[in-house]
Length: 531
Image 1 (cartoon, rainbow, N blue to C red):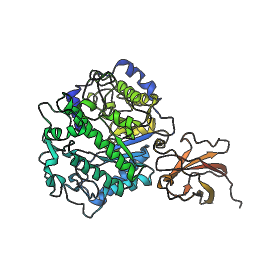
Image 2: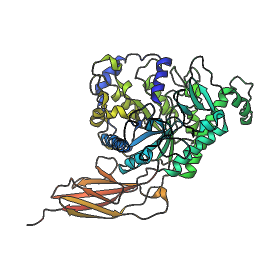
Image 3: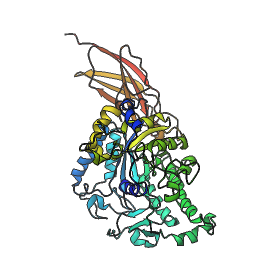
Image 4: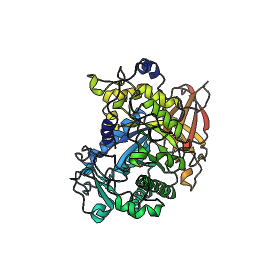
């Protein structure tokens, strides 16, 4: 997703302009306001598997240990969502019913891991055990990142080569063919029906990024199917309209498939950071570069306004003050144009949040002078429309590159945050917790409670929040400052108690749409035992 995107930015958008002096002067002051002070915020990280050789060098047990460590690190840092790439190039990091195992997992496409295991299933359990969301990231049209790729004989390309287009030495599903759409929909339905995913996620790759002198050869599909879509093929913009319509149909039908199977599973898109430039459309942003609508044929605003997607994460990776794609301008544009019914999160680049290029200092650090993170996050928070951020990418956080993990822990994720509720999909909160009880032993207080059973999966508690207050504090849960833990089971062990003390616990249930129920409250007076 991102490596190629940044390559095109280098070509299309030229080099970044130096950060303006006003932004630098405000850096220290705004750094203090970059802490989220609400209750619900999406805190996601992309885990890329394409172009990674780390997984194929590990045994299954080593890979499980590595993924456990990676998710633990993200959870401890403060993240509450993982976007994991399960379909990098028409292949699978899971036991697919339609596509071969990924070469990025085992070293050879179609080769199953030995002993057999399922990385996506494993990751889902890791995330849910930590009350984190798992978003299954797929690339819909990309089939190979290199013409030299040896495809497994069971790959759909081997069976139907006529469904594909070669472009710039890479292979893509032809978006103009109904057969391509039907196959991609089958892949999504297979994932949603068999796995407990929280969302299906697509990134910025729809029609391929344009390459000078290269032609995407979809003329036969255009001549055959454009008239069926009511498009006059003699009009100068007919091909562009046809391509956009093809992607629109895919997005609309994929969302319908997801909601039919599991209404609580979200559908999200992470588009390129520019929808349209003002030079192309009066409603566009004051920018100059590649455009979702005109170049990738992705009408993401239509999808958001039509309710076909549940969230957008535009990749607003550029610097504040960038000459052609200023971060401030783009965050405001997306905030002003994405409807409230569609959650808006901002895709943040770690590397491009330095004041200067990474090579401009021997040891650039987000916690020192080379920092735009505070300014960027402050702008996102102050928009009033942005409900969180997603960071590119998790491996840099794992390596603490530029001190990013330290910076997030110490200056950004100071308070825990719940995941934003998708009340537009379902606003009915789960039932109230009942019969809170406690047992004191070994200087630990074990809390237990009950909930009403229901056959409605959407209303069933997915996990519980445990808030704690000491004597004299008002037991209000308007933020997470008193959230001491989360659990999937109706019990919790508080190992941080002091005796004597009076504690009031408030326990809430959270459903599949992230709706938090009203809190049940009970106080316990802990006394020293008499000798």
